[in-house]
Image (tube, helix red, strand yellow):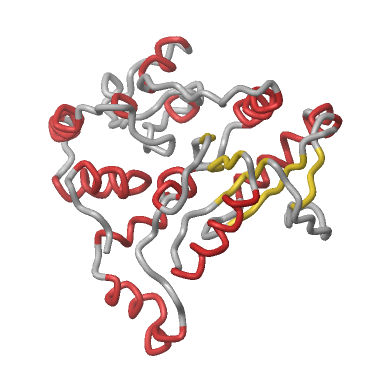
Length: 251
């Protein structure tokens, strides 16, 4: 029997699910080997019997946790889909600021109407079996991950820096071009799509194991960035991870 698959979303732009839809249009053969029972972006039916759950989005409300745990209890395999689910994503930027200040800035005098708390990746709430990183995810990586899951294998993501991808694609280093880049501390696997288009890596695939944060900050300073600019650059996608490295846990 085909494994039953469900897609869920929490706080996110749902761009990763749109990438999934694009992938399924390009690889319709995947639909021959899986049965999608729940996918709000693509269907109105809602089946609750599934073995594999792909979850996009970060956990940003106390009430999210119950649903995330419910999904974990039902699914044999849970996959974090994209940077928000994997890292907390750009939602975690607010974790650097007092929560009440953020609530008031966003909601004004209606701040008490809305439930919220510091943004968390899925792994802070439940055990996650696999990750498909990126903002948005890579189409080929999603198709490969599904193939690996059907073969009983855990989808693997690179543990080496993006600089390797740049060398393989013969990109000129962004630092040598007078620009800045987080490639030396960011996971590879996207074929260095941003540097290939002349834009430095922003870190959407997350940090490599044991990143040399001292060296990357020094490199950014040497290329003219102020401490505030460095903090902002590292905060776009990496707030939750860098706070963990600093020993700070969101309240």
